[in-house]
Amino acid sequence: MRRCLEGRPKERSRSPPSTWREGVIVQSSGTRTSESRSAREPELHILYASPLDHRIPQINIQGEVDLLQDSLKEANCRMKISVGAATTKSFAQLLTLAETAGSIILHLSVHVVNAESNVGVVFENDFGGAHILYRPQLEELLGNGEQLHGLSFVFINGCSSESIAEILVEAGCHLVIATRGKVYDSAATVFTQQFYYALGSQVSVRSAFERAQQVLRVDPNPQVKASADMFVLFGQHAARSQTLPRRPTQVHESADGQSGLRSELWDLGAPGCLPPRVEDYIDRSSVLREVLRNLEWSSGKQARRACILYGPEGIGKSVAAIELAYFASSPGRLFSRKVLFVTIEGKPDLANVLQGISLALARRRLLTSASRNQKDVLQALQQMDKTRSRYLLVLDDHSGAVHGSPQVRSLLSNIMETVRNLSLVVCSREHVYESLGPCKCVNVPLGPLTDAQSAELFLKRSHRPLHPSDLEPGARSQQNLTQNEEFLKNLAGHPLLRRMGGNPGQVNAMCQRVTPELKSLWDLCTWLPMSWLPGSMATTTTRVRSMSFESENLQSGLRRMSEMPDSSMQLTRKMSIDGVHTEPMVRMMSMDGPPLARMMSVDETQATENGIDHS
Image 1 (cartoon, rainbow, N blue to C red):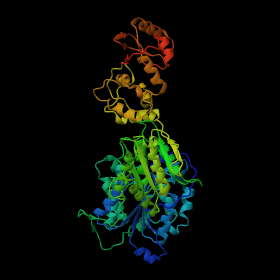
Image 2: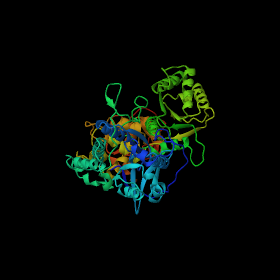
Image 3: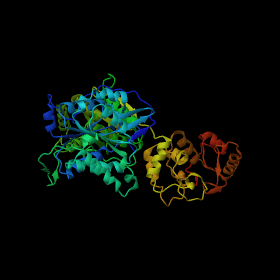
Image 4: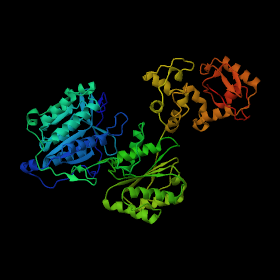
């Protein structure tokens, strides 16, 4: 399951300076007596940690929040819900709130690390990286246990979290729900939904726990059924009587007439404000962390306000920018619910950029309607400074306006100079070294996918399974290949993938041709456009394809090539050049242009549009 990480190396715990993120908890003033604490209406606080780390699967926190809200709503339970990122600071402040205010339910959605003899819980740092708290650091944070008395109970939604629950119980927490091993996501979803529904229906914690287990035991899915006894409850005696305080149910009516909870509703995507996420996303965590690290105070270094994410067409800048926007705008993170996303298409001019920014402001209700008036846009942006919250403007510049238009750079300079709480990320095909107002542009490159990542994306986007003939020319078996380590290695080394140079846009376009009608991937090798071939390979192929061959020279060149002892010149069935079919053909040409041309007895200065068929 996604929440259990075994065999991970130990990492030194560190807590960089940060500022409190808006919207995680509501601070209480003064201390409260135990009597007033028990009478206080309970609050559900969801702390989640899903850091940018390719080793750690992402948690679907929006789905989890929706599940909890729907479960409580179905039970007609009136409860305030708050959501925030799990950092050492947010966790410590929540414990303080529990000590002073009480009646806090903590739902902790995290990964758990079991490494050698130590155990730890994965939190986030200020720029989205992983911050692992091992047992000594966690015990230090929990203190003497006084601050845990205000926690009604803790629900740890993560695999193999029993050891973390034991630490919480030892520190003074009365009720903790955890798991003793790996649990499937489907089982965790069923258990969580049933538990919170029963709890919201005014049954005790123990009864809610038992009813959730009963539902798992009768589930038709064998994997879900087998997970029933993986959930454990610490504090059995207290759980018999612990329920949510009874009070009159006050359900308000929403605009569409449907009943709703009085809760702090969170939507991580803010519908209409951010573009939809793409399917089959390939992890770019290291690049996203680098961007956020530049925008955040870290180790005493002043935060930058302008980053240029640059790379060639199709390299994945738009996809990375969308993931960055969703991550950074999630509750409790650097730009919590404060991201403006602008896609610039068409002409690379000032009016087009103003139109895009004004549309984003209008979607956020910071501007009444879209406008191409620079004064209107600046005034709307300046209103953001009054909130004292940090905003992020993401410009996905398909048109090249930022790099190519001095007027656009002048606009951005004006914005960065007058809107001091605004940070900027520009996706560009070119570097931008010119400062934008007072802000230096930090250029962050987005490189190609690795061979393994290209193979992973290729498999996800193809329209049929791969067969032996796709990897080995001439193979006749049409059985589906088993995806194992050797298979992925062979696919990653296939000329078709290698020639695309790790460009995800090109991989995605090529996968649209991998259909049930395609006999073999080798049939696609000659389809590759010249612009897709990386570097010297494109030059080599262009030279070979532009040569004017005469049959006699071609026959002579092929005979010499077939006699070469070099094992890198692998030969197969035929070559078709200007209608001349000759046995055998060169399957993989790993040589540069001039030596290859000389070997084939062809004048490399001659040029036509003859093509090479590698089928």
